[in-house]
Image (tube, rainbow, N blue to C red):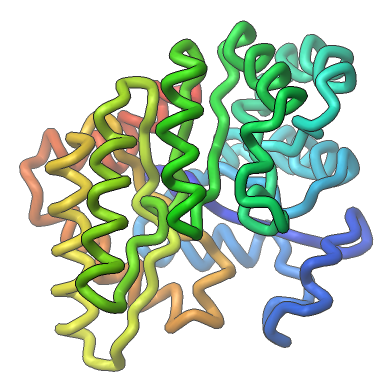
Length: 279
């Protein structure tokens, strides 16, 4: 089983400035071995590393880790999408590295929710599409999810991976309905796939957590189908958001209950196809 969303950070290798304002448990280093051990306890035997800093130093770090550890299936790395000339310079070299499987920016941390729609960013996205490199897209606000549909329509040859299912809200029914509508709109575009990741328990009752995850999983399956969904832990973010262990236990149990072919798609088949991973 492939964990498609594992973060690692070592502050000697990149700045990770956002950690200065993060909860205390996240501020310490979270090395690769620790992350692999945490998700292996839930049956994941390989992992995709996903960028957590907007520096080329971290890109180099993730690719070094990928080259040195067979349990790392590949790395979704940072490139400065607002600098298409830099993307044009670096992309040909990066695509020769078998560990380089995608690009992500911290879209959700930018003051402008429409940043990804900028002209320079879109020129960079055209380059990714031409090179066959997927874009991981972070959506935490309704506007981000609205922009995803626009991006996917404007860049039909670009595979876009929606991280964390666009963060389905646990709050009011109105919030949930707005998310569900935008989520379904994104799912209607064939070049969008999604990660069931970053969804944490909101109740100490394990049965409540399991029920909520099963509901979200059912919505995701109805919208995207199993062949456009993949699983991810979002380790170590869950350590301060209700617990990675309880969320992953409930999620893996829900996947185990699916039709075996559907379960296999979520466990590994979609990730292998979308990211071009070794079987």
